Image (cartoon, rainbow, N blue to C red; front, side):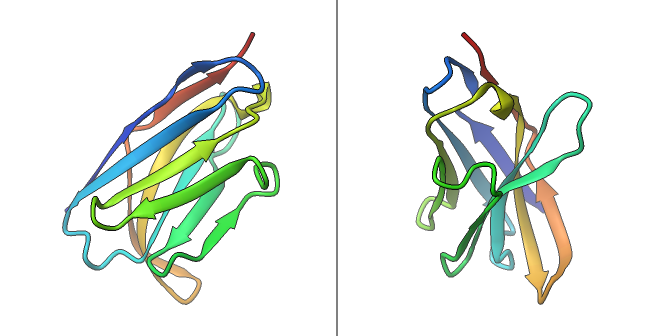
Length: 120
């Protein structure tokens, strides 16, 4: 079993920054992909960014150039640095960890969610 504990959400003004953290524990040795999804009220959950065990990253077009995903393998922690935040970034952000083979997710885990609100 894998546990994902998120921290770092909150309220920020437009143009501001926040950093989300996700600490993984448990049977994490088989996981090869971690990332962040978000879900705004009334909308489906969407991918924000992913990072592979080898450090390869991918981003949603809506956050490219503003958000940066990174990982500290020694701490089993993934970060999402969010700069230039916009009101449309307001959502619950979920940490995600998975075992991926090819294009298929074999199994995955989710964090509890961390609210990010961008408002003046």
